[in-house]
Image 1 (cartoon, rainbow, N blue to C red):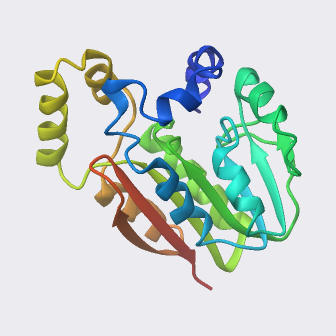
Image 2: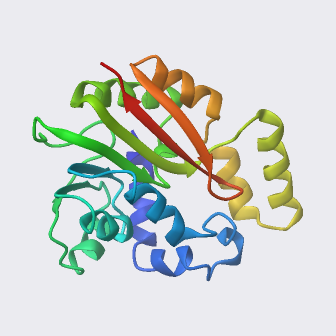
Length: 213
């Protein structure tokens, strides 16, 4: 359920914002256009929003400018400490994509950035099934995350990281649960959503899924 990565994020919490700002050369391309990526997610939702994987609250802050209420769900104690320092008017909860405290009966959107890949494909399907139950018709899931358009593209990106000497990035790409657009499309359509994808940088795709009747 992604909880196996919690210790990593506890350790990363104090330097996370420096990483997304491009200070770590290995991950600079992964986070290229980071602020624009967050805006792309925030501008597609409104009303009552649930954010999974709050991190340090960068997306949360943008959501609060456009939404009525934000419930933020974050499994890392270190990340929760960092976001609390910002004193944002949100409801911050300890939980993950699959296990979290009770939420209000009326949710307009579910969002996340750079986090859904912490679930295996089997866990992703369980999550999508759960979100289909939480959302009314017209409700949206908007995720921005590293995904691959094809097996060939995945191999090409992995090899380019290896050839650049980015061994940490290469190891991440080989061992974390990144998936394909084809699988994501199948998962969401199978649980009553229409799905569209927009590429935001070489690594990141925006998934926008709308719940059907």
